[in-house]
Image 1: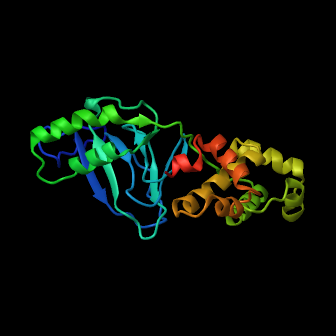
Image 2: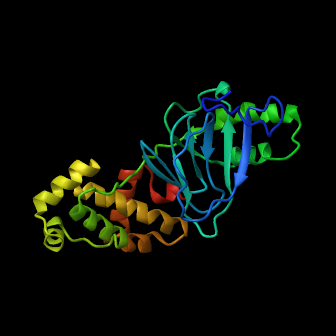
Image 3: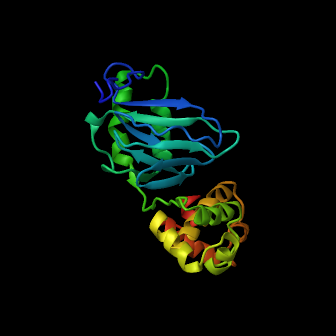
Length: 255
């Protein structure tokens, strides 16, 4: 039995260690924070999946999944309309720890994708299921992807700045200009962003811009156009910032 009284799902039949569920979520709607008694591998076959945990937020293209260990609270949203089915392999903790005890981005290569599809087939013979299950954890390839988050400040003056930038990440005004608009000094706004988000204003704005860039990159917009839309003067400066903050280049993250 699980920690909340529910047993590991057995839709795959008696002895199944990995069960693949597929369901559709409404686009752009965050599901309530929840946890599972089993490990999850969160991914979508198309579009962009958002996952939020206490450790940060991930925006995941089809080539990347997030390993969510059992018991970790998380919330999910599909940032694509129409939303493709979400395919979530549930993995019995008795099978192993996988990539680790913390949420970890992993590469979804053709082999892992095929294994997930294979395990999601109805009526898969037990022997075939066991063979496929024995391979899944071995092919989970962690990616050096860093969780990005740009939390909203609590103070109404700093929050007004944050919301305005969320609507237009291209806005390059500094804190002195924003301070004149919201009635606070640049020093006060700088202190509020650091105290309430854990990031300097410059760091916060860069993470916001990366979050804004993800859906544009997922839609196959050219990198030069994405760079302009999120406030960078050149593709090279955007690629450098993306690599520094996310851990991969845009082309590595959206192959």
